[in-house]
Image 1 (tube, rainbow, N blue to C red):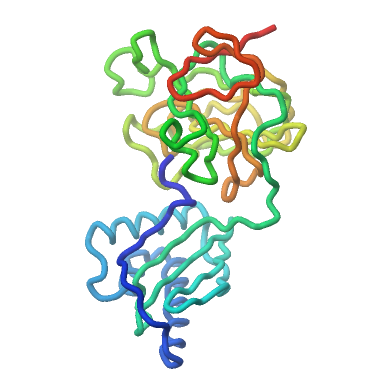
Image 2 (image 1 turned 180 degrees about the vertical axis):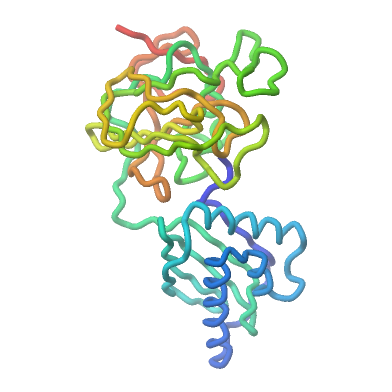
Length: 325
């Protein structure tokens, strides 16, 4: 899940130029209109021609096209664009898309050719603040699982580098020698976690369901689909639990449905931007998947490496399981 709306950034070169003169200012507006037209028409390679001649190398062009393809597939077409600030050669816009809003920054030369662009999720100031869950949670699975990514620093948990995934935990299953698969690990079915039940961590309401996405072949993530099959639950305290990369055709719940702690809601899969079967779990402040802020997940009564822990947030490398009263 390393390709994210929050990090879709392409910085092409470093030099700064003076602001556009009054005459090129109209050209800058034309460049912006052309960007919108080509983006909405999915002519992403056509956007390359808006940059300075020979400004982009082949690798940068490919990265640009991949980024724009991802933004289009997740955020949708641009419905409007409002200039929020302009400082020298840098113009910042709020770009309104079909499904969300984005912060878009263009840097231009004195001819209003693009030098660089940066696109990032727009976070409204009105969003609620959530540092951790207050609702008591159980782990979202049966038996012992392994924490592949978890903890409060980036070294233990790369999710913490990104606002929309801060505090997320990736769970998988490993045997006693540390292997996640039975034989050669070349198929989803060979992984211990694949197809295992995913359960509700608390009593909650199903808010959103994403389904109909095939599981990936091992090592081949779907770059245009971050979460794959997924379920969003809302707790009684308005915390939102996202469970992602679920197995194709395994989701057993519908939006609006109430679930109880321990109910099976799906099975662990390898859908979306995922290379191997695992479960992605996060507590977040909103149901929307485009501009959430993640929170640290604490589990009420669990066993960690054989030791009972209360109100604990798992860390990378630990083996965890629920303790049932």
